[in-house]
Length: 215
Ligand code: DC
Image (tube, rainbow, N blue to C red; front, side, top):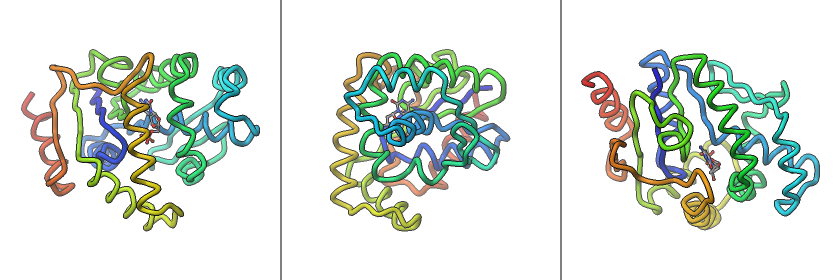
């Protein structure tokens, strides 16, 4: 079974995917983390976003794995926290726009998705990675609400970004993420659209589960 969730940064996809994975016994695959691993590896190799060829090479044989507690491993090393850093967050969207990097990550995500019952969240899961998924959702919220949620999350995790930095970062990622050559974030008629702006997280999770159980 594949549950696919797309939506913009901060819409709550990660939280919902984590709740669904526990309640429905699914492996949770955070596809944004695969792009964040490429970005982290690029930073570690002192590459800039402009060094496309080198970044593509690096994405050709990158090893990204997830465990059942949502930890992320890059070439065997636990990078769960490091991939959320400000530095990675600032360059990940342009890196994820590189067509060849996307091809490599989509291959990787399909391999991960085909070997388990999964909930997979990202920007192009319902449209490119698994267009035939059993359940397809688009989770949304206003920009202000998403920036507020990310700010709260980052404070709890001691990640050093101000509200204004987060707001601007999300705004520019929204633009980038919906203007890609391939794999753009988009709404389609066959997704279930859920606007979580005025909903509590439990209400959102219950709505997902109700839809999955009734279809
Ligand atoms: O969900 P996230 O914020 O961790 O994602 C990081 C970046 O990766 C985001 O700016 C867009 C990109 N991304 C993508 O292009 N396609 C996906 N399926 C998931 C994420």
